[in-house]
Length: 309
Image (cartoon, rainbow, N blue to C red; front, side, top):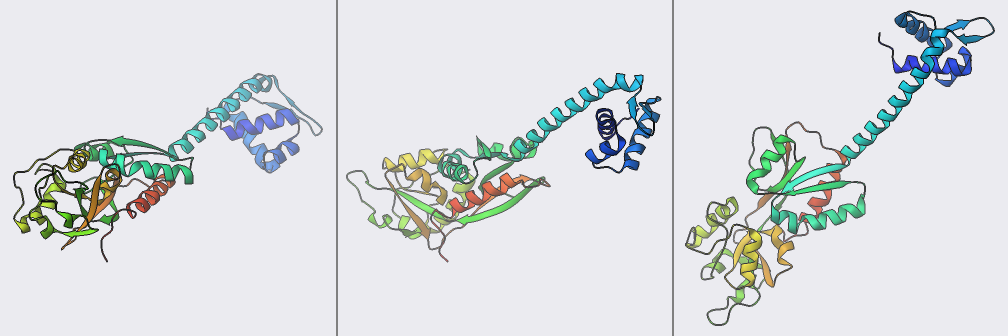
C-alpha cells in the first residue's frame, strides 16, 4: 500500500464537505482528478470509502475508521514539514568559518559587527584554529569555509581569491633608551633597504609567511639570521611594542596593531603581494549567507594598507 498525502487530502476534503464538487474546488483539482485519486486510494486499500448517490456522499464504515487516522497523519506530516522547512532555513542562514587566531581576532570582529548590522538573520560560527588544521576542517565539512593567505591548490579544495595585501613593517613608536633610533621606519612606506641595520624579530623560519619574508630579506643579507622568534603573530606585535625590534608581517595585522603602541608602514622596493583566499570543499555550492559574509569580509580587507597601483 502506498497512499500519498495528496490522496489523504482529497479523502479528508470530501469527508468534511460531503461533496466532490466543493472538495475539488478546495484542493484545486478538477472533479475528475479528485475522483481518480479516490478510486486509486480505494483500490490500494481494498475497500470503498464513500457511499455515493446523485444527491449525497457519505462515509462507509471503512471511511469512518480511516478518518481519524488520516487526520492524525496529515497533522503530523504538516508539523514535521514545518520543522524541516525551518531547519533548512536555519542551515541556509548559518555559516561556520575557520581561520587562524590572528585573522579571527584582528579581522573577524569588525566583519561580524558589520554583517550583523546589515543582515541580522545570518549566524556565523567562528573556529580559531592552527593553520595546520584548517584544510582538514573544510574537507570534513566541519567548516563551510576557511580564510587566510598562502593556501595552495589541493585535491578536494577550491580557492576563491578575495584580495591581495602587501607586507608591512611593524615598528615600535618608542625605541628603548640608548642605541640607534631608526626614525626612517616612522613613515607610511619603507623599503627593504631601510631594514638593513634595524633589529628584527619574527616568526620561526619554517613558517610559510616568514619564508616569503626571508626571500626579500636575503637581498639585504638578512635571511635566516639568528633572531628572536615567536610562533604567534600577536606575540610578535606585543614584542615589537616592547622594543625588541621591528617585524615584517601581513597587512591584515593592522587591526591587531591598533591596540598596541606601534607604527605600520607598507613595505616597498619591491612590494610583496599576498593573496588572501577563501577555501571551500570542491563542488560545494555557495549559500546566500556565504556570499553575504564574503562581501563584507572582502570590503574589510580593502580597508587595510593597500598595494600601490
